[in-house]
Image (cartoon, rainbow, N blue to C red):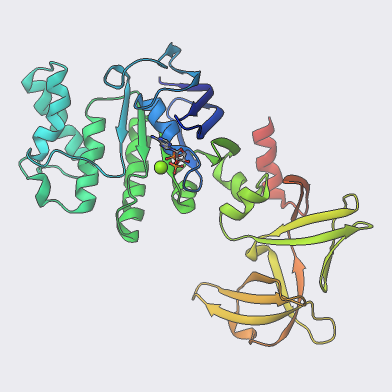
Length: 360
Ligand SMILES: Nc1ncnc2c1ncn2[C@@H]1O[C@H](COP(=O)(O)OP(=O)(O)O)[C@@H](O)[C@H]1O
Ligand SMILES: [Mg+2]
């Protein structure tokens, strides 16, 4: 049982950069929470404070109720894996893993047993005598993970651990890490700037912006119900259309759709998969610019009458040609004003049901 509580933590660096700003988060036992945000949003600083490598300017952190805010890193029950794994290249794999256990005065036979078990766990059984320099990038990153796990931390901290690997390896490793994390039921905080990584691994996602939380939710909710235009634009592909609402109708160039909010400027958000297109001549609201066939689906780039570019996903890309006029039928929209969600329309029953389980 390991629970991490972060309460009103801030970090202001000398020089005045407020990297983390009154940030709070509770990570439940066995949960994997992803910190997701653009570069400079404070993800690494937050993680480093949990690991003890930075001191908070204010705020408090506890693990299982024990205050760790000022405990040095080597005495915290945390294990951290960095983007650059920093393995000791003059030691073989076994010695890299055994080092921390020796410092803790674990008996040699027990060290051997634990190191071999962890190597097995990360898919490197039998690699103990290998030199670290003889391993591939992916294998080295597995050793780095194993080196943290062998110390049996209560909280695992991962800072973009796959950033230096190629796409295929990254996808495979994130599945492996998720499997291991679930098997060990280890409470985990995972930093990434990759939305795919967060969507595929996390129990919950914290979207960070300027050291603050923009949204905390389950991945499906973050994707389908982004609370702000920033989240909407950051996760997945989203059409963000700036327009005006008058008498309950949102319009932009020749495009209009009912949005039941007060008159005024608004940003409408529509996912490409929620925008249905039909060929149109007289009542065209847009014009096809480019069609891309991805095999499983197609993506139509189109222009509204004022040249605003938006995207729609279609199941039969062959039906559309550049230059053709199209009519637009959005299936689900959200509208924002002053950075705040003011309307969410056409919820599917499936999403509405999920919402209820979360609100309960
Ligand atoms: N040691 C430091 N000294 C001064 N500023 C720092 C330091 N580390 C990070 N920062 C600043 O804090 C902000 C957040 O950085 P960081 O936590 O690394 O963001 P992220 O991991 O989300 O990319 C950035 O503006 C960065 O320049
Ligand atoms: Mg970082």
